[in-house]
Amino acid sequence: MSRRAILDGGTYYHAEALHGRRYRGCFGEILYAPELTAEHLSDVGLLIVPDRTAPAILRAKRPLLLDVLHRGGTLVVFAETGAAAWAPNVSWHFSPVNFWWWRHDEPPPPVALRAAGHSLFRHLSLADCVWHHHGSLAAPSGATPLVTLGETEPAPCLIYEDRVSSAGRLIVSTLDPFYHHGSHFMPAATRFLDGFARWAEEDWKS
Amino acid sequence: MRPSCLVLECEQTEGGHTILLRSPALGRRVDAIPMHELGRADLSRYRGLLLGLHCDQRHLAARREQLEAYLAGGGTIVFCGHLAYPFVTGMERYRVIPNYRVDDLRVRKERPHAVWEGVAEDDMTFRRGVAGFYGRGHNPPPAGAEVINTLGPARVPVDWEWRPRAGGRVLVHAGADLWMYLETEGTAARLAPQLLDWIDAGSAA
Image 1: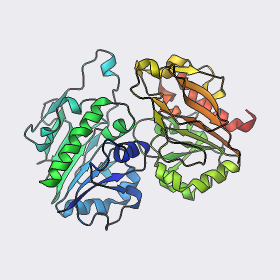
Image 2: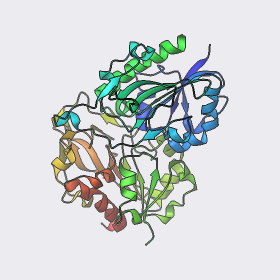
Image 3: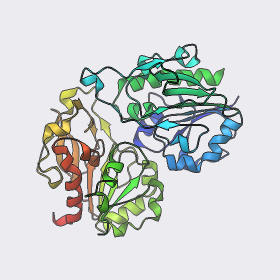
Image 4: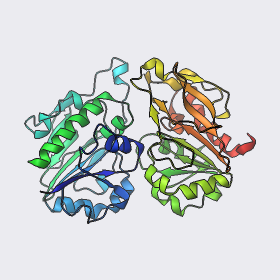
């Protein structure tokens, strides 16, 4: 059976979210991103890149990350990782973060759950995906939008799954749950990681 | 003018670094290098080193010798964030306020400090009505540190200044980058320029 692993960017919120009590061991082996080698990933079938892992490091490690996809593995990439510069067909659009909507009687972001049959949503509800987002993604042709802003076509994505741009599976998101959970600053982000951890366990075993 | 401060760039699209670097008044006073090129930097050229909340602290801890030598040479380190990997001897890991409520997050000024001069407590406590950006816990102050601001009735030391025996100055803020407030409305926007002035003034301030 292949292994699963998660990158550690060395930040305080990665320390809390990956090495802290709640999720310790939940995401597989923890690999310090700046020291990542091909040997570390030799039989890794599921690799998670948490939000805010340094884009400069990920660009430098690009061949290793792409190799996971080339071998048919799964790469899950969260927000603020500069993925458009190193992952296939990622198109990211900036929009300013609205972190105050819930304090000012503003409507919540129009987040919509798509592809309700996807395995991720056996473990996550739509509410678990709503706090704010860091820009949006244009899903490449043939990819599956999972969580979008509104339901127009094509809707900007907060999470999509791409099985067409490589031999593997690339899941990309503009959510930053590791930062918020690891900063003790967003209950929804913790609920998201609870569900995501269960999905990662199930997906790896399947 | 030659920039007197160095910031380690972590390429996060929103938040402090970008705001600081593109400010006409302040950006020219600050140099930026990629986070992981710290080892190649000649820190002796700078009066201040700004370490923000997105720093790779494992890398900082691995560069402890360089950072302590910089302090011993009279440098000033400003650290914002939660300390997970202590990178200067005497500093300890962050502690969150358990089950905090809004009242636990209210900022209280404990002593005057040039960086916080004229900054209102409420402008630190709230950002667009949301409390908690400023701090939700503390990095324990070492013996001899001077506590500047605290949080809530428990008076949790969220900001402090410390002069290590070996030399230099360390200013610690257990929350979002102080320079992030530059584009906010209200008196918290004074933090960044006053921080750079305080660094430039050196230990005589």
